[in-house]
Length: 389
Image (cartoon, rainbow, N blue to C red; front, side, top):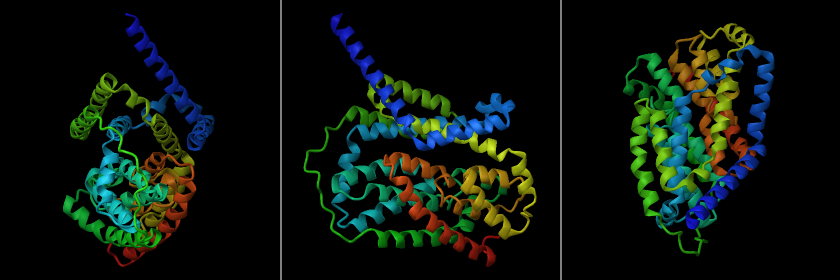
């Protein structure tokens, strides 16, 4: 009996310490504080809408994100990614080769697994490789964020805005993909060229001389076994039941993993849904959009890019579809708009949060903003040439 009480007391103390650490982290999160301030301002402008805030959140997305966070944290905590990183290093002799491999993997995965799922797979592996080799983790994660934005633009299922526009267009999977191919091919060539220039050809040095952490086979098996069923259930619009099952399994088998999940990211996403949808619903925004003459392809193109920098590319696609049915130009504009400011794509936010480095935010914009200008020029040329129409 005493042993049971001591075990329960120890678990409770661990839980309390974990909650205290999370609360302290949230108080120091600048993006979270900005979103809270924005919500307060928008509530002051239209206090009558406060009761509708829960309906503004895309709860299936939050449920899917929760499950992915838990499952990928389970893979990471099992020690499997550390071992996989050791194995991969044997095939990548230089920093440049390592970076090109990881960036290309992120882009390819995003075409079929969506941009956020690709990041959940690649970023933890990248962080493990960087711990072993001393490679610049933040810079690699930034380039992977750019890669999933570019790669996911190729297919109708690569990202949420494409899925929405695909359903709107009535085009076949092949027709949509062929339409996006010129833009994605050029963006990937540019990104891979930039990657080769930024990362050096210096030989990779393994600096982690310690033995890999012990492999938690149970945790690894559970995480892998739940991954595909969770994705299938989510695709069948059963994300709530799927995440409930994942949480229950981890709570029973490895509750410590749940304490290590970045719950602050979920809160940030909830606030972003509310803030961005309140902003896009303002009358002044509707009047401004109505006066832009979006029937002209170039105006639609640049408006989509600009709107993505303010309200993110998924809400921008949904909002602009109310004023134009030119899905071809709109698909180019909102996918290009995913670059630039971190809010341009929710995948950017996921990547930077997973990097766990405050310096990642200014460094991200140092690469993403110039890349936006180049990507916008590429898309502009394709629109002018008529390829995007």
